[in-house]
Image 1 (cartoon, one colour):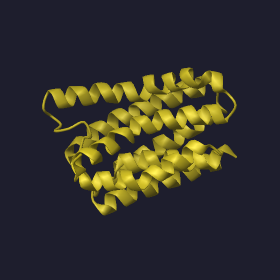
Image 2 (image 1 turned 120 degrees about the vertical axis):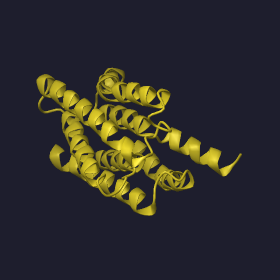
Image 3 (image 1 turned 180 degrees about the horizontal axis):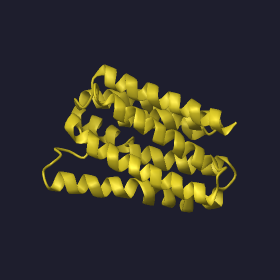
Image 4 (image 1 turned 135 degrees about the vertical axis):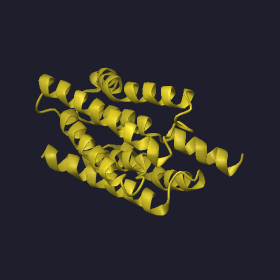
Length: 192
């Protein structure tokens, strides 16, 4: 198997969508609501993943983006706009449902992290793969979930894959990881 193929599979298996599902599912289970995992993941996916999937398919099929990772810096503003609007919709829904839920606090922190990444994009293309994985690993470890340790073990391979695929520089991967880890600690802080 070629290095590029391995890197591509690592990138796919540790995609931000996968991290969202892992984080929401593991957190829901860890917080004592295992019967709510499918419903909770479904709500988050409907609000956040589905709009981005639709955008990505549309942009790639019409030739506006060269790949599903929105790898060009010029692709990022639209990606961030849809992601932020989706997160605002999710946060609004969660505020109406339960103002004190862990999911609301985690979604709010994720929204802030996306805004920070958007601002940083003026100068550097922060790795969203690393940001999502860093956030997932840190938040879940601090929550006491073994899934967080598994994701933490994947981080070096994911960083390598982003380099091997020539999607990011060392700085972009490091910033993504830093923003994700800070976000994970922020989720813990706002949960106390």
